[in-house]
Image 1: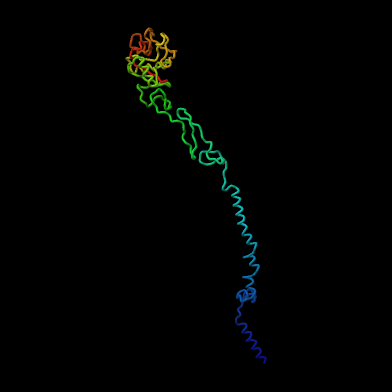
Image 2 (image 1 turned 135 degrees about the horizontal axis):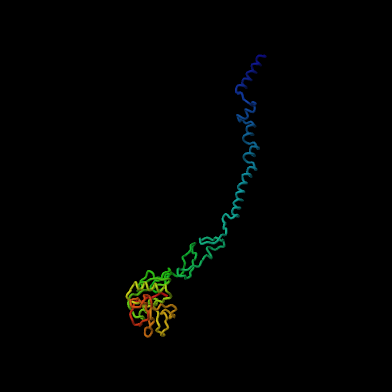
Length: 294
């Protein structure tokens, strides 16, 4: 009887132990629950539905709040950027002609017009239009013509134009040396027709210039100058403005007076004559002449 009970006990134990597999590092109960997932409470609680795990890793309110915080902070930074002038950064500076409201007063390129003048000193204005400075609006200078005036204001009278006689310069004046024989009055009128007049000689330097240039052009003739006493005998005045003479360079025994009312520069070909000295003569005589600009 005892033998049967023992055998049954062994068979029962064998059936129970046949599927058993040893575990390492833990108790058998823990290994079964964690490894098989056979419905025990251990695996389910630890891996899937444990409230602590859900709170800590998935649905914990503190985690959601922490994640939301940067979004709120970014919005605040964006607002701060707008408030700080990200899209309204006008910093007042000196207004310049560039199409921009540099001084931040709501107007563009205002008050930038400046005065100007052309080469002849005629006033005008330089305006700022469309962010760029326009040219000076002073009237353009005139084209140079032969009239005894520096029309284009380049500092030279009657340059680059055709005058009726060769032109030379002394000081600030222009001179026409007309190598054709005319009466004194005809010569004067020819000079005046182009804005000149018969030459007025004010000193030795100018007299030397006229003498040298005239006698080089035509040595064999005397040359009319602007001095005369046609209005009153013995009172010599210059043709240009009837200005009384303060400088003279008379030759020997000159002036002779009488009907000799017009003055010429002598060429020195006659006895007792010195080239460049002056002598009076009849105004109806024909001689080359010298014109001078005003």
